Length: 158
Image 1 (cartoon, helix red, strand yellow):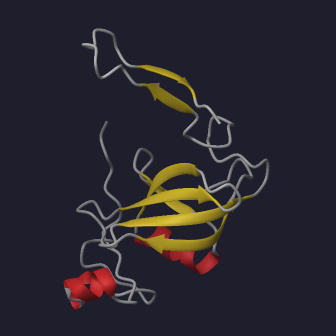
Image 2: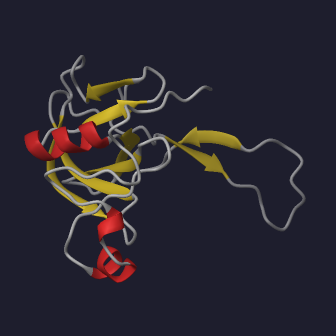
Image 3: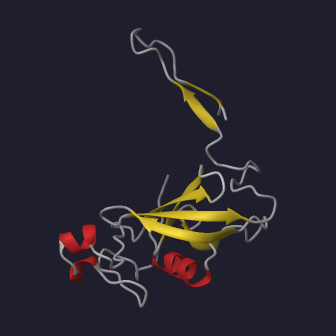
């Protein structure tokens, strides 16, 4: 799969009116301070994990570029960068199942954001029409027996 790079503005050096570049901060400030300094990858993207406000379960994973993160912060509606389509998208723009952001957290080195959301519309986050994109689980092989078959997928247990 070819990954289309996000527009040029987002980079490891990216900064906006809403955050600062990591180059302006020490490691201690990035990991323990109160300044938001997201670290975008070489393609100008940052990982975004989305969880449900009520149940706490993971709904989806997507990528954000600088513009998607900015729009999400400004509107409190989740926006993402589509690597396959090479464009910005607002979750729910076609389905009506928008993600209203109630909280955003970041990890220790600020290269992942965690969005806590309220799912609007029909209450589904996955494009397949189910509540969560994580609706299947791997049937793990017995670690005490040599694996001879492919790992299978099963419907996720509640």
